[in-house]
Length: 239
Image 1 (cartoon, one colour):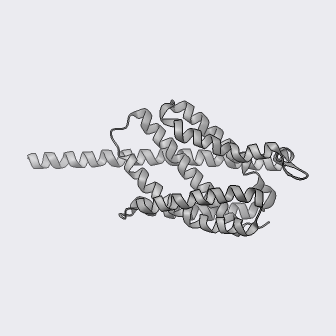
Image 2 (image 1 turned 90 degrees about the vertical axis):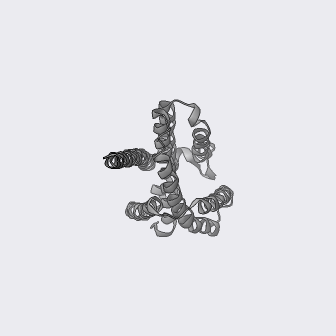
Image 3 (image 1 turned 180 degrees about the vertical axis):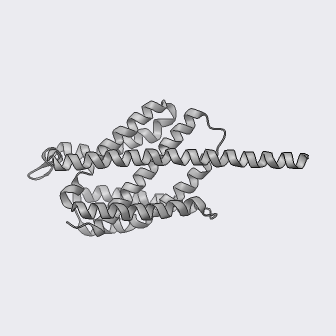
């Protein structure tokens, strides 16, 4: 009898962990899709209304406000990353939404360069690649931590090169960065899913901390999705 009782306890504990994980990832994807929806809407409206073109550019190139639009999301996401643990959840949520809006404004350029059809097609291609790597990261038994460290080093290098290329405006460098991005962002998606899988079943987290981790997970996947989308769009987008 005691064996059966203990066995039921194990099953019950396993069920609780499965439910914790399911709830965690449901919220992670909820926040990710919320951010994508906000950014997509803002990007489309800013471009089609002509507002982005009027404030971000001058006859000779980027306006001062154009540079602010380009770099403000970076400053904000660094603030979120370094301060979220000391902030209330609703404050982090507010910054998360603001970040989605700023990214939307900064992405307005794609509607000025590429056709709507190619943007939509690339979005679905990205969703397929992203989903496949997310599943692989979740279910693989291989430890991806070393791969993740290497990919983040490459990401930092790509990021620095991308900033330099803003001023150099080299098509060749742009294509090289995008090509590397195809591997870096798909790989990081798998690694982040494996990392979050461990966070999802951490029973020592408070309710507030769990909500923050779900939100930060959504933010991370959102950033990876956007960067993978832009990398693919560079090769598939019809101008």
